[in-house]
Image 1 (cartoon, rainbow, N blue to C red):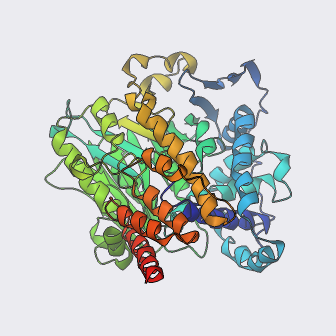
Image 2: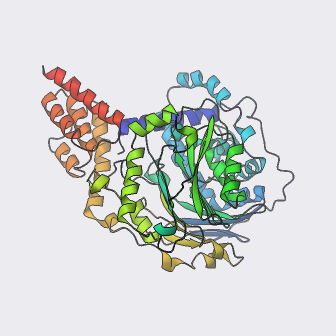
Image 3: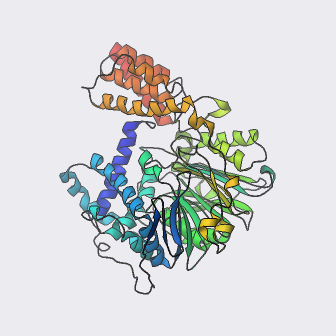
Length: 560
């Protein structure tokens, strides 16, 4: 259960619908495009299966650690990287693809509606391949050779791989329907225990629990450029959270976007390029500035060389850089802060109506309470579930820093080249520490990955608490009440709603959904009571509050 499961379903329905047809319809000029691969030397991988969770090929390998995070180490030229990635992660990648496309079956409309969009989407996607680096296309081509044949009826493997890298961008562009927001921050000098730069982020990109099960930490040593690590999922060569051997870090946060009308460079490939080729902030800015994107995004860049952090703010028609002065901290939620966007009406509206500003103020509050941050204190901030002034706002409320939906959380110490990656559930599991100096030192990578386990950050006790168990129950019950709202023939028992609400009593949504159910079965007095209760809670956004007020008004009319 998220903010509103019907909106979430609609959001993913539209997103998957667009991606599905963007792939399945083909693109007039690019449908036959194959990247140039003849210039690359290639050794076809022969994977050695050591056990069910460890696979290797030369000095490339895949293994699962005891925290259930998959760790991938690959090296080579662009095409070889793709082949090595695909060969080692084939089962995981195909499973991830199946999870993603299985959602299409529930959301894609009729064949007739498919045909209506076919022409539009041919036009929509016609330029994406022109905006993706040829070496990344070669890498995607190599990896795609290990994709499932099951979906060849949709599109050739290479095209599926290319266009699925735009899923993140399309998801952010559809935020009017599901406003999920990431949180990141950077602190240094007087704000950290040792004065070094320290960066933390929650990546709140939710495609369901199954999608988040197989977290993948990639360590990539390309033939050209800088070795780097990133955290994402099988089948992904782009970067949403990562750090390179030079101590450059990138994390991305969605901005307010119009629905894009043509696909250009996926943001995760822009950040991949920054990690692979930038050694400092100026070089990162130069790379971001030359790429054409099709959504609005904030890229928080940290730099060991500069001992500083900035936010690069990109959109299809604007570009800005937010640099702080006279302070040693940067906060990034989901609104723009640079001068370039000070008069942007969409951005200003987003600040007023969304939960972005609330989380920004919560970060300010947490930094006042937590002086001299270290990795453990940073993890506590990323795991914080309360509202302003410690108010209980319900578990899963998107006004919290920890919305209990994160795909992953990451902590970077760029000057030390250390990174901590969260394990399931969400960011509550143990944070695993990796040392890039060790991993990219030329030693056996399997050995170097174990070098810093003493620095791991302990699992959050909340993950084993009764409250967390109740939250998980409330998610399941939320699905049931949504089904009852959508299907009038489903009748809930008398004790269902009180029990559902007791599992997450501070969350506004449990009362709003109860009101919707009662309204649908014409029990207007009960509906009125529930809507009024919802309005006493911390409601996520202005549109959400307005929606509750709208239903209360409709209910009062029914009672007259």
